[in-house]
Image 1 (cartoon, rainbow over the protein chains, first blue to last red):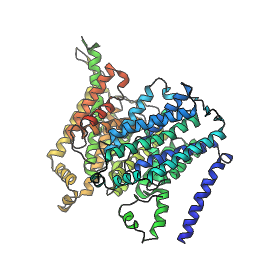
Image 2: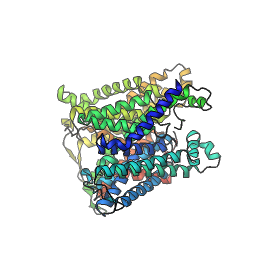
Image 3: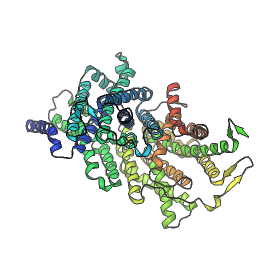
Image 4: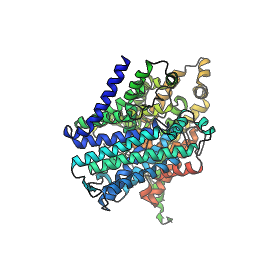
Length: 330
Length: 295
C-alpha cells in the first residue's frame, strides 16, 4: 500500500514535470510563466523560512527591486535581457545582504517586523523615484533578444527561456539545501546557540542565506518583469511579502519544492477568480488562517509526513513528531 | 520669525501634526505592547481593527445617526467584542506555538477584514465630520491650532496615563503583570489566566478601534488606512521595545515629531524617516532604546 502510494506519487510528479514543456500548447503561456516565476520565488523564500528558520516579512522588496532594476536596464538603458536579468539578481542579492545584516541584529518576531519595515522603506523609495512611474508602474518594457539570438517577443520562445532559468534557479535551491552550507543553516534553525558553540560564524551564514534567498527571489522578479513587460508597486507591496509566505506555508515549509505547489495554487486562485475582486483577498486571508491553525505542514509536508508515519523505524521519525513540521528534506 | 529658514507658523504647525500622528502611534503601540506582553502574539491585525473602528463609527453615524461621542464609547466595545470572539475561536489554538504563527494568523485576519470592507465600501475614502463642539481653531497668537487636533493629543496622553495606571497601580494590573511573568504560577494561585488573556486581547483591540474613531475626522475613512499605519508602528516598536509602556508612548510621540519636522525640511523623506531611524537604532543599539530583548 505504502509502496504503491509512493510510486504513484513519484509517477505523478514525473508526469507533471514532463508536462511542463508542453504547457504553452494547453494553457495561456503568460499564466504558465507567471506560475513558474512564483514557484521560484516561493522556493527561494523558503531557503530562509523553512531551512534557516528566519521569518522575513519583506521579500517583496527583493522581488520588486529586481523587477524595477531589470525594467530600468531594458527600457531606459537599452541593455539586452541577459545583462538586465543579471543586474536585477545582483541588485536584489545586494539588497538582501544589506537588509539581512540589519535584520539579524534581532531575532524571531522582531526580525519579521524589521524586514517588514525595511521593505516598506524600499516601497516608498520606489513610489517616489522618478523612473518608476509611481502608481502607474514602469510600463511597456521591451522584452528584447536574448544573447542576440532568441527573440523573446514570442511568448513561446520566452516560455522556454523562463522554464530553463526557473529550472536552474530551483536546481540551485536544491543544491544549497543539500550542501554542507545547508546543513549549517539547519543547525542554526534547530539550535542556534549550539551551532554557534560549534564554531560557526552564525551571522555570516544568516547574511549569506539572506543574500542567496534574495538573489533567487530577484531572478523570479526579473523574469516576471520581462514576461509582463511591467514593474509596478504591486511587486514591492507588503501584500506580495504576505503572499509568498502563504505560498510557502500552503505548499510545505519543511520541503524543498513544496512551496512551488503553494505558488501554483495561489496563482491559480488569482488567475481564475480575478473577476471577484476583493473577495479573492478574503479567500486568501481565510486560507492563511486555516493553514496556520490546522495545516502547518503544507501540502508537500503533509504527503511526506504520511509516507514517513507508516515507517516508525525511520531514525528521524521520532524527532519529527517532537517538533512538528520542521524536518523533512524532500 | 523663522527657524532654520522655515516660518514659525509652519514649523509649529508641523510639530502639532507630528504630535497628532505620534498620538496615534502611541495608542496603537500601547495596545500591541499589552497584547504581546501577555499573549506573546504580535497582533498584525491591530491596524485592521483601527480601520474597523473608524468604519464602524462611520456606519453607525450614517445608518443609526449615532453622534461622535456615542460612537467614541460604543465602537471600541463592539470591535473589542469581535476581538474577544477571534481570540476565543482562533488565537487560543496557537498559544503553544512559535510566536511567529501569531503574526501569520493575524496577518490572515487583516486580509479578511480589509477585503471585507473593500467589498462593502470600495477602496476610496469616505469623509467623516468632526464633532461640532470641536470644530474651529484656537488662535494662540503665534500660531493657529485646530481644536480637534489638540483634543486628540490630549486624549491620547490621558489614555496612555490611564493604561499605565491600570497596569502598574491596580489589582487587575497586578494580576496582569503576574500572568505576564509566570502564567503557570499565577494560575496556581487561582487566577483565571485564560480569561485574562481574552480580556487583554479584547481591550487591546478596543483601544485600536478607539484610536480609529479618533482618527476618522482627521483622515478619510478607507480600508487600507490601518495597515500602512501598523507597519510604521511595528518600526516604532522595534525602536522602543515592547517591554515598557511609557517607553513606547514616548518613542511614539518623539517619532511623530521627527516625522513632522522631516515634512518641513525634506518632505520626500517624511514617509521613510521612521524606518531610517529604525535602521540607525539597529546599527547603534541593536536591542532598541529601552532594550529588554524579548523574543
